[in-house]
Image (tube, rainbow, N blue to C red; front, side, top):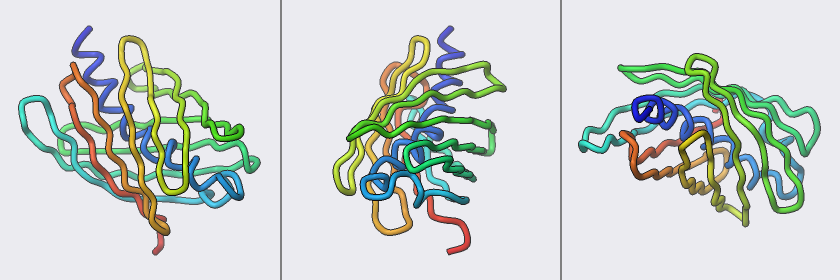
Length: 163
């Protein structure tokens, strides 16, 4: 069970980062400003102190200013995964669901935003993580922390593709 939670934890932060981030941009025009492709990477730290580099590609498809479907593919030297997330923005809250098919994992997410800062939480069976995201222009800076799993910290930066 712990091994499965560790695999799920690896997937969730990477997926959650751009998704929760989208809420801050949604303040004035909904998710519309996110439509398109994003790329980036960063590091994740394991509970044994080892730090590993990750690389990610994301695709955002906006069906209305309040609805977003995001696909995220990330890889490291040791692993890769593919996630799909659906989000809805209502007032100051972001709610949604996510799934990762290769590990048969799924769950929910919730977040709140203020200008330039997002605080959120992602949950799955037996798992939760806190997410903090800061924005500057076409860049998303993400920090995710969890206790009790193999991966304890994730830091990454995504930028709009083609810039």
